[in-house]
Image (cartoon, rainbow, N blue to C red):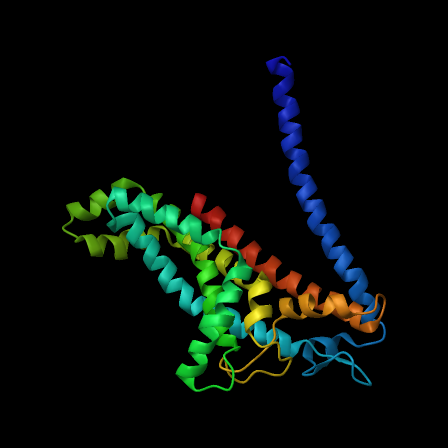
Length: 289
């Protein structure tokens, strides 16, 4: 194929791929919205979003997603508290402190961590982490929100470390040389010059890590206890939005209220993850500029 013809064809294929992704996301949203509206016709949307009881097989059934939403928020919050300092600190060490041979080894290890299946981490949580937390905090069960938070923090670390390290490595060398020329120490240069310059990329890394945590299903389904109650503490069993969909979709009757309620849960989850990824994309664009 002549070069003059091949380049326009390749450009149109790339544009078509971009439009196709946008269309697929929009169709997913319409699919979730259509089945969610089937529930909202008979069950008020306010009772779904603000209801404090998720009892889909009671008489009458109750489809309040607030316990599930709070459970997701609690698990995500504590996972973020754990993984953000560790992830950013590890990225700072790899980018600015570690010698080159060690840097390559650490980056390879981070990539290996990202490839560990979530079901393996869930299995480790059941047989080791859960009993350890139960004995440490003298709990009735180790299947709690804290168990899920610790495992989700571990899963988000590779994303945060990789993107943060790229952002730190992308800071111009002239910034470092200028700081050293003014008499700044290595730590002062890293803390006051390099870290602020890479802040947009680091924030984007954190947001993508949070999106990874919010959308995870298998780990929270296996280790959080799956109790659809209003959680008062991270040290008690709870249930998340993703675990509810995965755990109940196979047992519902197609076309029932319970079936459509799970699509409403999916719509709420879609809105949360879309917002997180949209904010992360804004920070990534700012970092590139």
